[in-house]
Structures are given as structure tokens and as C-alpha cells.
Length: 303
Image 1: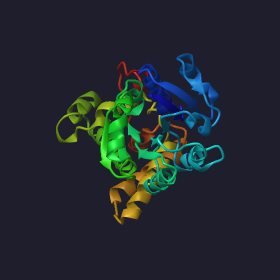
Image 2 (image 1 turned 90 degrees about the vertical axis):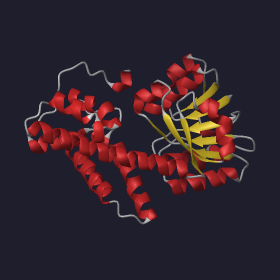
Image 3 (image 1 turned 180 degrees about the vertical axis):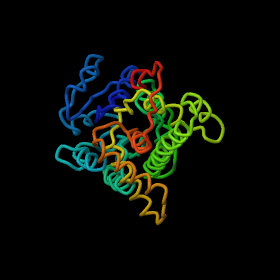
Image 4 (image 1 turned 90 degrees about the horizontal axis):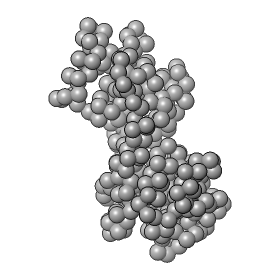
């Protein structure tokens, strides 16, 4: 298929490469042309604007920073609204406001475009290895039609009508943030109380305490880099969307709000450009405990 791909960041760039390797023709677009070097070397073409990326595409995929950026990609000058029409499909993989996802989808649908919101999870290694989970909202028949293309990037789960993918992604990030904070507290408790760190980690990876975070993210803490592939600024952007969604749904979500405050304290303490798991370092520093652990901790974005 002919695909327009807009947004070649950490996740998007890796996902786009999997589509090229799967035999599809890509026109790629990003604010930084340097990010497209590998894609162009593999046969992709460059598009200066979102409109040009969409011009001859069967499917247009977007994966940008957040709501402000995707709104500009769609509604801005030389954006998707100026270029897309009947027969085309727009799949937005941005972590977005569900309300805005539905609004933008409706605007493109009025031009004959089939909109799908399909934000992603699975970290950089998931994007690199074609195992990036997608939560899709929109017309189920359309989603089934594009599934063979989308699953070159990872498994795709149908979640319901427009906006359902965006809500599911926020719920996924909500749980991750709570798990990451709780992981730090639990490991610090164990070590501060005299349990050897490796033994504590092995024990907490099984039974009721098991989580993807404990398996996948703890090594970034042990290595001491706290996963710079996703920053505290990005965490707070996502947590802001999550709290907004909780307010819209009329739910108190006390644990989420406490965790949001912890991430904000970590951001203010260490800097917004620091790795997401500095929320664990906050607990280490407060307790006077180090969670460094010797080992061959290969960063997940290099796997």
C-alpha cells in the first residue's frame, strides 16, 4: 500500500521502518529531516508537509507529541484536511485527548476519509521489533481491512467506536505510572529493610506483585539511567491527559492524582528532560537507598 507516515520520533521512526521492510511504499514527513535518513535509504520518499505525505496515500499514519501537534498536522496550513478525501484512511497513533480524537476524526470523515484512533504502547523495543501494541477505535470493518498493514508494527486490538483507542491508551499509561511508582516504593522498602536487591526483584516478578513494569523497567533503574527514551516531560503530558479524562468521566481517581504529583516532583527535582523512571530515584533519594545492581543491563531501545 501507499502510506503517508507523519512523525518519525523514537517510536514512529522505528514503526515506519517495519512498514518499509514489509514492502509498503512510504512518504515520510517530520519536523526534523535528519530523522528520515534511514527511511529514505530504504526507499521511502520525503514529503515537506503533511498534505504532501497524504497526497497519494491509501493510508495516512500520524504519530506526534500530543494534542497540540496533531491538531496542527490536521487543521494547520498544508495539513491533512487540505489534502485528504474519499477512499483514504487516517490512523492517528498519537497519545491524544479522546474528545479531540473524535473531533478531528469527524472533520476528516466529512471529507470522505475513514478515521481510526490507534495509539500505541510497548516502549522502544516493541516499536523496533514489530511488537508495538495498538489500541484501535473507529469503524470495525475499516480496522479489519487495514489490520495486515498495521500488524507489521505489532498487535492491533479493536476497542470500540471513535475515541475508544485513545481512552484505552490513557488507561494503559495510567496503570504504568502507578506501577512504576509502586515498584520504586516496594524495592526501596525491601532493600531498606535488609533484603538483598536481586533477591527482592526476583521475588517481586512472580505472584500477585508481577507486572510488565517490574520485568521490563526495573533494569533501567538498576543500570542508573532511568530510561531516557521517555522523559518526565512526556510523562507529565500524558498524566495531564489522564487526569483530564478522569475529570471528564467524573471519577475521583485518588491514586492517579497522587502519582501525578510524584511525577511532577521528580520533574521539578531532576529536570523534565530526564528519564521517566526518575520517579523511582525520588524514592531512593528520600530513603537514602541505592537501587544500583551489577549486571549486563542492555538498554531496551538497543534490543
